[in-house]
Length: 276
Image (cartoon, rainbow, N blue to C red; front, side, top):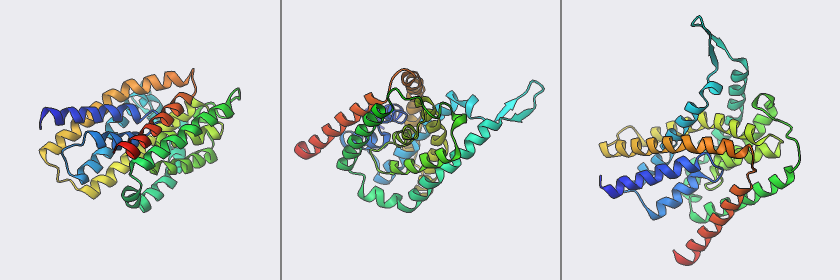
């Protein structure tokens, strides 16, 4: 592996670590970055790499939110007891995952063949950018109906799961779609972000499993190195980004991310219309 190829992997891992948790579309950014710094690898491997690199990002969530996500509480005598609220949250996560799982299994190949284009990504960035700005203005000065994860109802979880289905369109953002849905339902920004983190665990592991089954386990030494470096970089960057994100939304709205999406989408459309 050349130094330039190693640098490409670091850049992709850095981009994944930043964009996975901000509602600005990690898949969209990864596909766009690949337009300019393409990895020296087969298309099949790159398709899988863009999914498996997310495992590094999800590991950061497990590290930072372990106490909230682990459904057992260890007592001083060495025994473990159920944390009922956490188990209920995980059951709600399962409910929210069902719509996305069904749609992904049925349409993933068609979407990859027809919608993974710069124009689709740009349009999705712009549309959801305006959605964030509009919803934040709509919710301005309103008290959230759901302030914490414990207050999230089963119907809220199911509806958020339906919104998550929209994220199969590249450029939408999995976290962006779920957060938009949660905000519309009256969920607080912090609770919406935390539920998104919970949702990410089974979704990313499930998608990674499907991609590995499709690609197979016959990795070369270079491919294993690419995966290891990409995941490690995404993990380290995600640790910092998640901390920043949770602190930011406690005091600010999502409007800034909306304006960023609109600006990036416009630039992408201009570039691929007049330059490329």
